[in-house]
Amino acid sequence: MSPKVLLRCSLCGKFHAAYLVVDAELGQLRLCYSCWQSKYAPPVDAEGQPKPVSQRAEKDIRSQKRRK
Image (cartoon, rainbow, N blue to C red):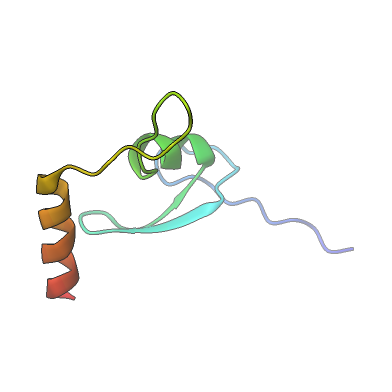
């Protein structure tokens, strides 16, 4: 049985990073669940349903897709 490799979170430094995220400003990050949820997870309401995206956010998303 091979040993499990523990990955360090790029933001908080804990050894349980599970998400690989590419950020425009910071580059490639490895994040734990709590850091990913606070910074990159889509917002949800009290019932666990995704919140509607504002029109300004939609424009930002479209402009980022066009740049790629």
